[in-house]
Length: 453
View 1 (cartoon, rainbow, N blue to C red):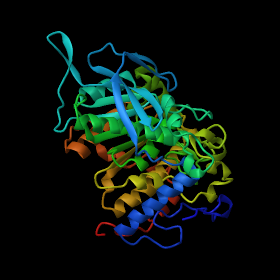
View 2: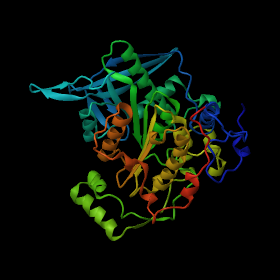
View 3: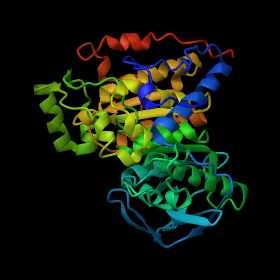
View 4: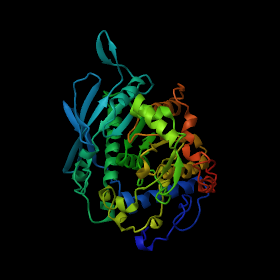
């Protein structure tokens, strides 16, 4: 089907209806919902993120190396000196074109007879794995490893440069072209990198099984621009079981159409321990106390569409640069987690509130509410969660503890009680002093019954 020119798209001022086809007809059953999901995927690829390429004919191999550099904003160099870490260069060939990028794989380990040794998987089928775009904090990695999870980190900048050059391994294999189907923005390129790591995991599981990773238990995360790419990866690779976009903002989980600029919120309800978790006891307590004394915050600025089209233009395709106003967009960002909605897949949205105006946390919460309606229509209400926390433009330790608790229950049916998962169904924007009545409209969006097909 030929896509309309951007200038010919109808203006949509309210949140677009995810259950409404482009021709105006409505989704009435599960089969039609699957068809609508295909339409949404085509819309995103044509108008925004670019196309995930046809990867048939690719060949993949790996080799162990001594060190790699996680170039994603200051990750630095990682050397293969610890027995609980392997560094692998993933090599991809497509016809005469070839490229590679490095990944760092950290395994669960414990000290045995004075030596640090990798411990066998605690779960049937192998280790669950968290794939991280860029580096993860040492404490966060250690917590995951201690709970039996493998952590794979990779430099998204090696896969595709975070600039307008359209260079890197992805573009070596799939050069950026003139036609829409030949264009993939950097976010889509990074998502492709995640898919190649999953290919490697599957290849190893079917062959030597040296990594002992379970390809059915893949979790993916990234922060900020990598959070945007995480959401894209989840939408276009069904093998990802848990999608965790962190601090992703506009172009990720923040709604294009819901701006919180100019609103005043009461932040006194934010938890003290969230400040301490990121800032430490003294500074965290001081910052929390300041909000008890002066709780009201005026939101000064949310990131606009124009910023994505200038500073972040390379994250998207050429067509996205033609949009002059958000009302032209045939989707909003609740469509992304809608593409991931399935009985055996899960979504965990997270991001900071204090000093997070640019990321529009209230707009992120609106996306969660709108996406949740899709999950409710499918009868999988608890497959989507949100944790909007106090402070820290990163995947904080508290986030990791919630994530492990969430994954343990959803993937393995285990409850440790370290964190209350009911916390992941709300935010401070539900408090009466912060509540926007527009949320009621979103919560009451009519949805079809998709449980019976």
